[in-house]
Image (cartoon, rainbow, N blue to C red):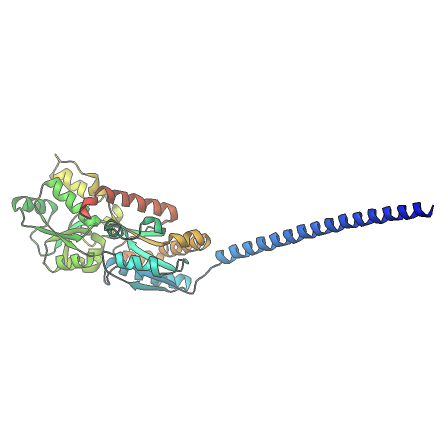
Length: 366
């Protein structure tokens, strides 16, 4: 009997021990689950806090790289934007200009040396950028994401105000009768060069094209009488020299009442000129389809890593570019603020770049 009692007692102890072990395992597992859940909750809270922090992000200042020489239209328009950006948001835009290599030097500096944190901004115009890409620059469109476009500058045939040509027809007639006797300047690898070449080809004109590294030099030489004219950014010419030193013979764009009202002189449009004076000739799409597309962008890496900051930047720039104050000053300087945001602007940039691809031979010799 005593022996049987010992056996029973041992069995009970073993059962209790097993039960205790199972309870400990269950408790440990439960504790582990609780710890994991608590960690997940903490992570979710942290992620939510990060999202709130990014959405509420407001930088002390923004640094802006413009890969062009001082005194050009991009700098002048960027300074207008910077003034109103600080007035509206209380955030200064610190502009830095860095010329060289047809915007290659400054663009490469931006990508290699300025942190991709959405606090470093890039402002340029499309064909200057594309020209660098075609000349084997170590970057491409996929290194950038457009925050907003801010204007399209329209191309026009502009001559010195003291020249003998009062109309587009007179200019074409003179160039036909004097092969090699007329010079037109333009920025190398730009909309200027594409449309100038198309103009010469369409009318079969022998005109000397004088290449420049930027628009400022072209306009200065037209105003100074060193070259006869240019097909280039008309609004920029108006703001830089007015009508005392330059005369616009026609605009290479579709009829546009807003431009007609903006212009400091009476203007005509290329389709009307062709219909009246050259009715047997068609109007190539390239005559009216291209503008100098100006944009504001950040690093693609910044867009991917800080999407909420990108949204904040879009909202801030849209508020500035749509403001009555900026629009009024823009008009006083002969440009029209027409912001297109984010992916829509990026898509347009890519389309403009594809047009350049079709005219690659004008940018570089393969």
